Amino acid sequence: MSDTGFKPRGRIEPPTLVAIREAADLLRAGDIVGMPTETVYGLAADALNPEAVRKIFAAKGRPADHPLIVHLPSADHLPRWAASIPKDAIALARAFWPGPLTLILKRTPEVPLEVTGGQDTVGLRVPSHSIALAMLQVFDSGIAAPSANRFGRISPTSAVHVQEELGERVAMIVDGGACAVGIESTILDFSRDVPEILRPGAITPDDIARVIGRRPRVRGETEPAAATEGAAVPAPRVSGALAAHYAPRTPLRLVEPALLADEAATLAGEGSRVAVLAHATPNPHDARFIWQAMPADPAAYAHELYANLRAADALDADFILIEALPGGPGWAAVADRLGRAAVGSGAEDD
Image (cartoon, rainbow, N blue to C red; front, side, top):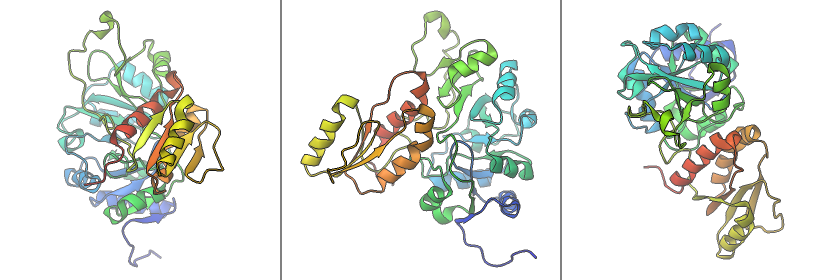
């Protein structure tokens, strides 16, 4: 017997087949739902329904020119969304899909401009989370799903995060547990002559090079003159590339390891309540500090980053101090998120 009783908006549902089918029905009806992925939780809508897509922007407070990523049930759906698919893009899809890699490709005329921020390109990926894949397979089309949080704020990695931040703005949230990766996908642009990583993620430049036989350009890296051919064409706008993003409301500072304890002590001595995320040994005897130990492995650090940032942001602290990260390519994606979080921190929502 079907449940015909009242179901409040913003509710969290366990990942049953009934909930997955209900989520797909809500998407078909033009509503928005919270969807787990292996990266972060997404705010999902039918990507071919411009009115539904506009609900994403309204719920998040997201600028209309900020494009969305479309999640597909499988790579077999690519031709409906991408007007041209380079052979290297196909090779990477075969290697990393389902998984945390977004490909920027020229869009087909069928893709609404609301999804692309008015551009002629579209970001596409196939997520590896089993619940996301089940939802996509039942829905049998593309789902636009940016992170399910207020625009510019810390991305959600649990169903509770989505509920706390968006509440009744979302019809329902399918609970898929904690996100395995914990930060957003790598975004790789194939819309120009030279492939370029526009947002770092779990799939690294070296991972990509092993598949296609060449290292992609990386936004922000200094390249030799010969390697910048084709760079005159501006890169498309993509999700999560603004200077201020992923940000807590509490002012956040990145501090070198050797200076961390002194910085925390100085702020505390001035009467500030300080939350610290660090590899360093905590100071458990000083009540002015709230110290959270962070993993030394970059993948484990990424998995815990947003949840720990949210917890620190909820502590009514005056400052969040984060120990500066080690160098090296393995830390590039986490460093990118923390750098943007520091720029955007301390501001209240409009």
